[in-house]
Image (cartoon, rainbow, N blue to C red; front, side):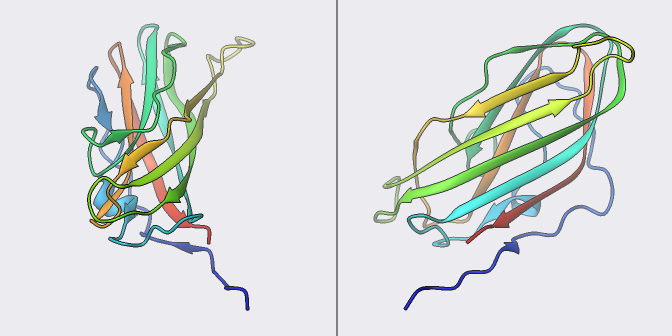
Length: 178
């Protein structure tokens, strides 16, 4: 007999904008335990999670953006493959962006770093008004990671913008797809 799984939200999205990030070092886009948690022992081979987020970005100068998906509660978590640094357009004001990341649990082993996961994602945003081709798409992930799925963990998306600016997540949620 086959199993029947139901898609479900694992955490409620925020009811207000999250705090704007203005740092030029890698910073988590949101608090992982609140918005993209994975419960202890929830992973099994073939389990799929999807994180979706969106918000606004403002920049004063052109710089680079690197997005790093991590398995863990902070930017100290295990990386699943950072994006290539992408050039961000100049002078953006409250430009909308959207991010999507799919995580697949490949193997589950004994407690400790004995399980493997992999994932890929995309980030897209509009560009400078009336400037063709200034929008941006960033792909990230694609690196298999050895992790511990026996503890409370989650999907952390690290954000590194090399110039002054701000990014404000307006919503984020994680789904179990099976």
